[in-house]
Structure formats: structure tokens, C-alpha cells
Amino acid sequence: MAKRARIVDIAETDRVEGFAHPRETHRLVGQDEALARASRAIRGGRPPQAWLIAGPPGIGKATLAYRIARYLLAFGATAEGPADLSVPDASPAAVQVASASHPGLLVLKRGAHPDTGKLMTILSVEEIRRLGGFFGMTSGAGGWRVAIVDTADDMNDAAANALLKLLEEPPSRAMLLLIANVPGRLLPTIRSRCQRLNLRRLEPEALDGELKHLLPDLDAKARASLALLSGGSIGTALQLAGGEGVGLAAEADRLIEHAASPDIAALLAFAERINRITDGLDTFGAFLAQALTERIRKRATTNPARLDRWVEAWEKLNARFARTAALHLDPRQTLLGAARVLGDASRRAGAL
Image: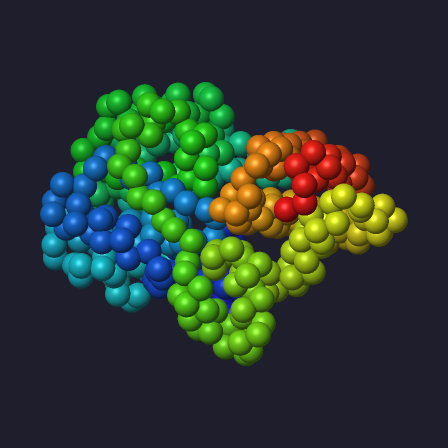
């Protein structure tokens, strides 16, 4: 398995352990349309004040954001650089971005709670207010300042309002890149002030090719299994490939498959096992939501009757796992509750 060592020791919730962080990644696969649109605007000298880079987790949103940032910091909004917005790995801008030390780049993410040290569930207004000071600084040698908000849908109401105020009075020679997994959670007034870059799930051929590149020791059957479980997300596929990922994803699929008659004893035993895995419950919850999404999408094309029951179950499960993460609740109760939600949906709407 291809590995990449960490360059700096910072909070990196979007790093898949053992692989390059998006700020170090120069490969962008399967997103040619979004890249071409960004390139035309930037190299044409008329980029927007803000891009909203939207799409499911793990498909390259952060990788595209850092690619745009590197280009602007190296060449500005000019056509001096390549049309694909690439920047040589050894260039000063690329090296500084990779080491998280470029003075013209600010990245805002959820931080650690000052009292507990645990990762906060929201992107706070204090973080967003850093943008004012950053954009108020004198521009560096390249003349541009770029800020990445990752992810913007983590903002609370106060943070969203602070961001909106900045968008209403945009600074010159500054770019704001908002990354969003669920852009519908953002204020309509924020969305209306950004140009949208929609990224898509990778096609099977593109995903298989990237897995060959990143996991050269994996055989074709294993790659096909990862592609099926990941739903077109290279990030999810890499998570599945390491540690307990494949097992957790299989358990998520099994829970949906046997929603009408879950094995409670096995579920309680699984809860004990998941409690011993770092971030095990969070990972399982994400896989459960992904598996449910794929099944709902598939059924919508063949038998959409009463599908709203399953959509309601999906919403309840997301809320349940988010509440468990925020309050550090017992995994057993969370899993039993999830089984009840799925069982109710199965009885009312039929199996997925």
C-alpha cells in the first residue's frame, strides 16, 4: 500500500491515515468539468470573490480547493500558469502550501474544545472572525490571499452570519473557497454570493484507476469491492481499505439487509467491539448513512412508493449518530436505536 508520511503535525480531520493530505495532493481525478470552469474564470482575470465547492465527502473538494489556492498564490488571476491550474511540486508556493506555512493562505476548520480537547461539532464564529484580520493584512509577494473554509456546512448560525457580512463587503485580490458536503445547509444568502463548483462521484473506471495508483498491491476483486462500498468516493474507498473499514461497512450493510429482524445479541456484541475502535462509531455511522443513501437512490429508480419512510429513517439516523458524537453517549443504545429506526421503516415501507 502506498504510504505518505505526515509533513506537519496539525489537526487533519480530512486526512486518510497513511496517504497524502489534500494540501499535498496534486492529482485531481474525475472532476474535469469543475476544474475547467475554475480555470477559465481565474486565468481570464475575472474570478469570483468566492467559490462554493460542493459534493459528497471524499471526491476531491479539498484537493480542488488547494489546487486553486496554489495557482492563485503562484500566478495570481493571470494566464501565466498552465490551463489545468497545476503548479510544480517544487515551486515555493506549492512547498509552503504543503507544509501549511504559506502566509497568503488561511484554512478554517473545526477546532478542539478548550476545556475537553475533543474536536468540536461546529465551526465557531471565533474561527470565522479570523477572516477579517487575514483579509485585512497586506498582500504577500504574489498579491493574493486565499482562505479555505472546510467544511462550511459545519458553521453555526453566528459563524454563518459573520461570513455573510464578509461576503457583503469583499476585499480585493482575495479568494474565499467554501467546501460543503451538504450545501443546502448554508444560508441562501451565502449561496447566492458564491459561484458554485459541483463535484461528482467518480465513475467506476476512474475510481478503479485511482485505486490502482494508490493501492498497487490490491487485486481487481478487492478494488471492485471497495468501489461498490464507497459509492464513487475515493476518500471512502481509502478509509475502507485500511484497518477496520471494510468490516464496519459490511456490518452497516448487514444491519440494513436484516432490518426487519435484527440479531440483537450480535448487535450488542458488535457494540462492544466498535467501542474499542478509534472513532469506530463515527465511522460506522458514516458507512450506515452511505449504504442507506445508495439503497434509497437505487430504489427510487425502480419502486419509489413509500420511499419517504426510508428518507425519514435516514434523517433520524444521521441525527442520532450526531447526537451520540456530541454527547458521548453509549454506543449500545445508539446501535439499538438505529436498529429500531430501520426496523420501523422496513415494516412501513418494505425492505430496501
